[in-house]
Length: 112
Image (cartoon, rainbow, N blue to C red; front, top):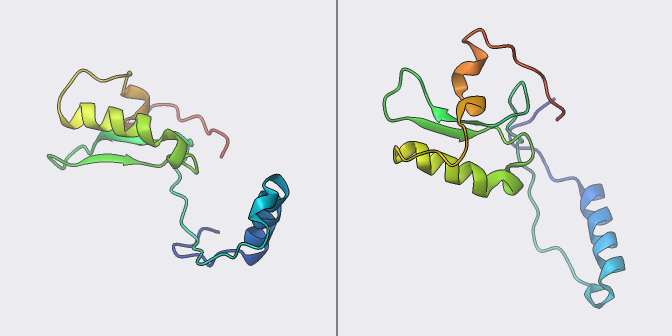
């Protein structure tokens, strides 16, 4: 069940802190000042949408990293910028088009 504003998991935070201090003993005794939880934006096929929004002139989407947004962010941003600027896309944008969910394309569900 997805929650838009989830509470941080204290158990997960404690486990991460333990692993960090095991790997970096000099960090023993540090305290967590703040923590937050967040919604993971997912698409049905676990592939981001990086595309103009059909029917809404000037609206472009760059979302649906399915939990990989931080790692994919530079590439997503590059392709999105190319599309918005009407430059030659850095990669083929067709696998990332929003319309794939409604144009009859076979959507293969990926691992999330």
